[in-house]
Image 1 (cartoon, protein in one colour):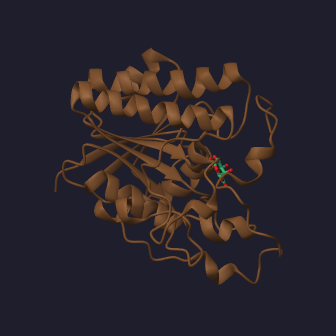
Image 2 (spheres, protein in one colour; image 1 turned 60 degrees about the vertical axis):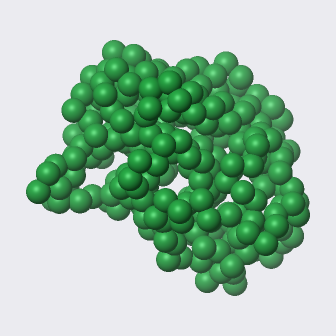
Length: 265
Ligand code: 15L
């Protein structure tokens, strides 16, 4: 059985924490990187814990050694100052891609976000939903940074032949918390299924895909993710009676559109 090492950046964050137990495999070592402290390994886990920042080129070079693929989740995960969004998300992703290239890591999965297209109207969705490669329409500096890293991933694919898959993640939490979540939810189990598809697809090249579950109220297309091998088994609709009543938002980005630009929230 050949062994693979996957580097996960931002492993102590919300999504990283949800993915850690779900991406466990007997033939896999998870190298978990974060600036924040990571929970100690359980006896049955094959993990390597690395304290380091995605903005530190030396730390990233070391973290990429003997790695087969990277799932890059690190960065600020909501609106923040222009300087911080640029430094952590844009420059940090550049540092990750550059370290991956230098170390010969041929596949990088980038956590993009629905906020890269947050100003797209829900109503513009055709029968298939809003396409995964719909041009960016960011709703915040944060959303801009996600659109920027998609473009950076495209550049690294074109220049260096790396496989780069950008996942426009909807809302990945244990359960949806509001009406918007009924359409944008990515169940944690589906999140793991999606990353597995990203890791195992043969020669994906550069792709942008949506990261949501097969929700009854979906407004985005799953076709591109399914072409990569993703099969969702979850639907937020089972929580429909548990979320507070309310109107579905007019735009993909929901409340992010009301966030003052550059204000940490
Ligand atoms: C995101 O991009 C954020 O990282 C996450 O915290 C949620 O706010 C999510 O989008 C969402 O839109 O629900």
